[in-house]
Length: 92
Image (cartoon, rainbow, N blue to C red; front, side):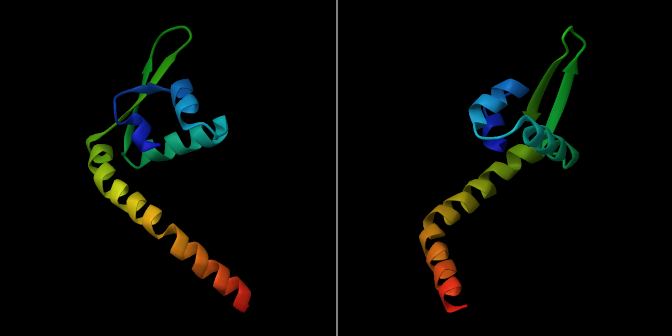
């Protein structure tokens, strides 16, 4: 989600298209939580219909690098973790 906001501001439907397999309700909930936590800002423009844009805050930008490292670690270790889970299920 945060990576989709890295290049700049996005509107709700743009995020829906870029993320793909997510419901409107879940996207809305996630955006609200990210805003509450200070990772993104939500700007509402007084137009008809209202235009709402989302963008990363400084905190959001600063989190991208450690997040990428965590994702890379998970990618590298996914098979090992899956195998450990399988062994655990087989032993119980």
